[in-house]
Image (cartoon, rainbow, N blue to C red; front, top):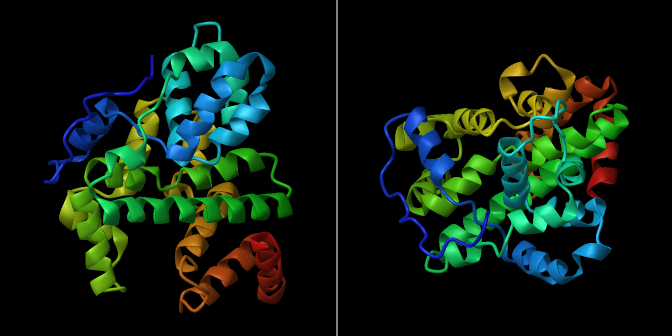
Length: 283
């Protein structure tokens, strides 16, 4: 049963040696979720007979950490009769059933509890979650405009694109803060460079490693992998994430015109038309 862990593990203060060690650490670690999600889950629990997969799925999909937690649980507890991986949270809930879902997910630990003594890290986590929501919104809008049949999975992939960073904030807040402070001191510093220097890995590699270890749906894993940028669905996610990152604090980032030009090329339309579409998505 995935329930509240009353004895949370101590936070990491030093980098682990390699990708294998980081993967093993997070495979064994509890995934805390947002307090709003935990409260909503408990409010729904007494009324499970009146709920459907869509209602619960919409609540879960607002929380990237709960989303990956449910997908990972379902993938590693899949019955032998299941031959097709459910690719979204709602499809996963349909496969699991409502009562089994509530039995599997008891009262959940929260990030607010985990980071109660780390206010700067909690704000860093919340910034990452907000950015993920924006990325998911951009990704879905672009996918719908492209008439992509995998729009729901593209939305989910963008939402989960930075979940390894979220886990780092939860379980190694001091290291996450070192990364943030280094990039604040040098805005030109590439994320991959500072991550390798301070963590011995890149978070994108950790994310792929965890998704594969948890046996998440193959389509979701592939669309989430920036290394397959030749595929339109992967570019859709990567460009949405990039735009969300560059616009996190406003629209004056010097990289935004390049982002818009790249999205325009993906959509095969002018930068002006693309900017109009982005404005419509953000509204």
